[in-house]
Length: 220
Figure 1: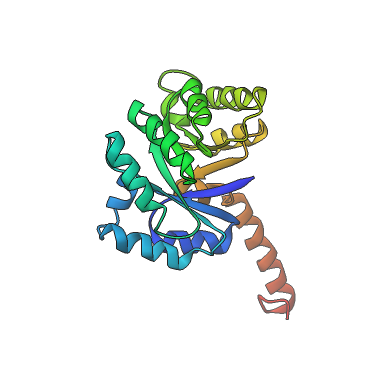
Figure 2 (figure 1 turned 90 degrees about the vertical axis):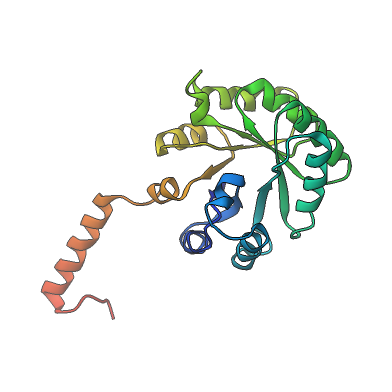
């Protein structure tokens, strides 16, 4: 199971990497623009807090084939362990084929149904990002993602799903329970994976009991 954080905020990336076993970080143009810093500075700052084996995903901005290819090549030069994100438009799918032949790793993104993900896998995308919650406006996003995984398995495609656009831990649990190997979570959902007020209450009770007995709040 791979846990990925969906943010470009360096403080949050560093904090969550200290708490959780974070495999990588996903970004997109909207996420990066929220940092109010030049693109190159945002990427450099993220690179400084990530370990070499952690993966960074960076998305193209252009929408025409030639420019997508050019940006994909540029993204591949930004750090060693990096993946270019490309939306599954007609031009995007064409660019995925080209960049895959050049050995550039691709995450096909903005997937809104299983067939989009499947053809992106056939084109050579190493990773697929189905928009689980956004699909829920039209169908069962969790179920559609599971169907995509079944389609990949049925045809022996080793493309990996990274479930995206997740809005609650219930969606995450259903995906994990059904064998989806990777999820990318916004900071608030990542925190909800481990935070629980009942745990805090239990810890407080333990501490109070210890303090009453030994007049201190530490073991040693």
